[in-house]
Length: 141
Image 1 (tube, rainbow, N blue to C red):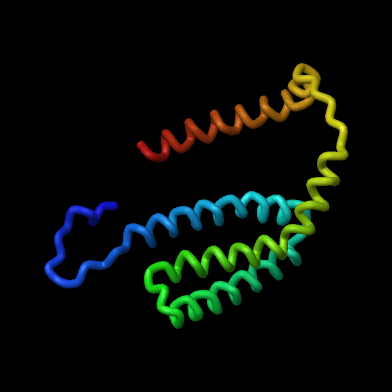
Image 2 (image 1 turned 180 degrees about the horizontal axis):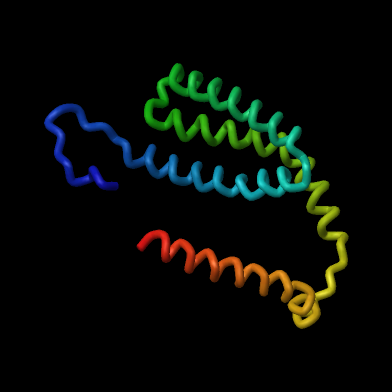
């Protein structure tokens, strides 16, 4: 909204609606990122790569069609939204299978036991962090 105070002597371009649509679509797109990271972390790279290829093709086709139909500034929002729908359809089934498997895992929450298990690691990490902090503090002086 930085350019809202600038007056233009020529044609006035209505960009605020397209900007708001782009913000909404980008937030929807951001919601899919953790899902992709989860699937990537459980060794489903083939699924993610297929989904990304379909995403790229759908994005290109959608933006060309939107420009051809005369959507103007809204064409970016439309193309991102449609390509995200394609991405979601590709990762929906593996995501549902993964969440079903994760929900079936029984977890026992005992904070003291967990802390005692990871305390040696925390001690080592704190030593490395402290030494690194002092080393880079000396080097940068």
